[in-house]
Length: 62
Image 1 (cartoon, rainbow, N blue to C red):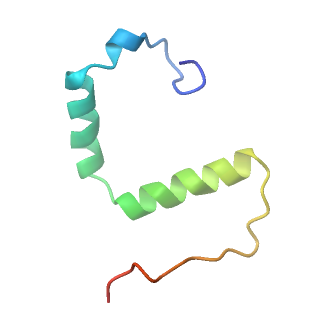
Image 2: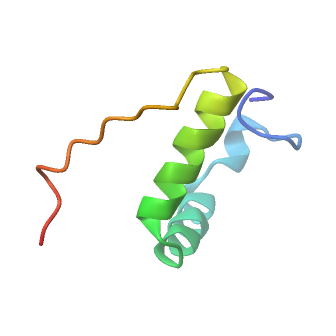
Image 3: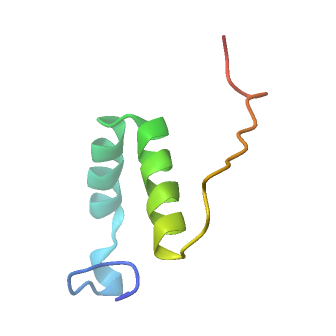
């Protein structure tokens, strides 16, 4: 749990009410921006060179 959360979390804290609140909060954000932010932070933490990035756009709708 310490690798996933900054605060003290017990396994039984992750119940259906907590999941519902998390999903409600996710519904309020731009998911593409969230995914991009998470990917960027992971690359930064792991010191991955992102000077050139390939994006598969075949699933994007026009």
